[in-house]
Amino acid sequence: MKAKINPRLTSNRANIFKMIEEAATPVCVDTIYLELIKTGNKLNLSTVYRGLDCLVTKGLVKRITIGEDNRFFYEVAGLEHHHFLRCLCCGLILPLEDCPIKEYEKDLSKKTDFIISGHKLELVGYCSSCSKGV
Amino acid sequence: MKAKINPRLTSNRANIFKMIEEAATPVCVDTIYLELIKTGNKLNLSTVYRGLDCLVTKGLVKRITIGEDNRFFYEVAGLEHHHFLRCLCCGLILPLEDCPIKEYEKDLSKKTDFIISGHKLELVGYCSSCSKGV
DNA sequence: TTCTATGCAAAAATTTTGCAATCGT
DNA sequence: ACGATTGCAAAATTTTTGCATAGAA
Image 1 (spheres, rainbow over the protein chains, first blue to last red):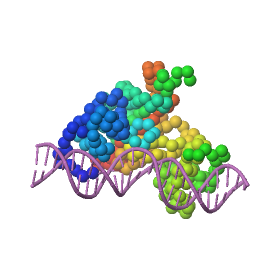
Image 2: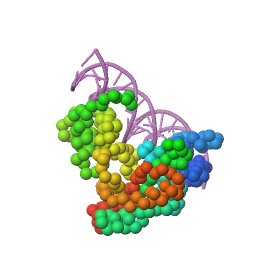
Image 3: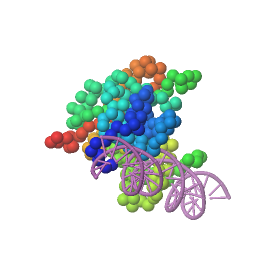
Image 4: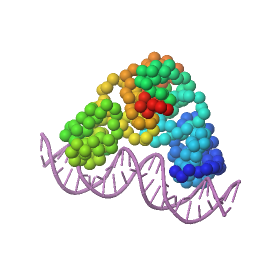
């Protein structure tokens, strides 16, 4: 993408951000797009993509991958470090606050001689609704 | 895909499997395809995709996602449970044998009322080669 | 004016599918 | 002959890009 010197936070982009902010879980591009259209906004899908790029560049939004769907999700940046628990049945994504592998990272860094900058943990299973009567 | 009653392990598929088996890390479709072509095999990319579907269905191969590239990787199924450490610079993927979150899973299951069936952990950073002189 | 944002269409990248031909048993 | 595989081309999905136009500072 062409480098813009001074990207603007247009109303489209503010709306995209608001939508992400208000969602309880990470959202993907078509969810954002459809939600904005449904609530009366008129904008193009590519505007959503470019708006997201802009928000990511500005550090307002984080682009992440969850699940096995090969597409991107977005969440507000600057949240506490967290992980996800995902329901394989209904797709529910539950953010988790605690992180069980902080010390492990240190050990691993020593063992592998990697500088470890981060990690991604995703647990999967079946939520209580979906596992009722199983 | 159309359900085949009795999928066959053709030589194409055996070659695909062998390639995956011999790779030290998970491989993606185009790596498999190019490697097979380079070693003298003649086959179509869609044959690779279908062959992989077949191997996954047969339980010989596992389809996984690593990194932020929105594409699939494949590894031999039936390996010990493991995770990955990935270099953000050169793309090196290092399989890890130990798993630091087995007990965490139990706790979380109680706390969230999920039936937890698995998890995916990926650590990222810079390998010793890439971080030399940084 | 000058830089940026947008819509639209087209292209890219990865994966899937339909169909006719071929192969294996 | 029958069912499965393959090549090829086309489609589907998600994301990116080029270009002309509209918009904001």
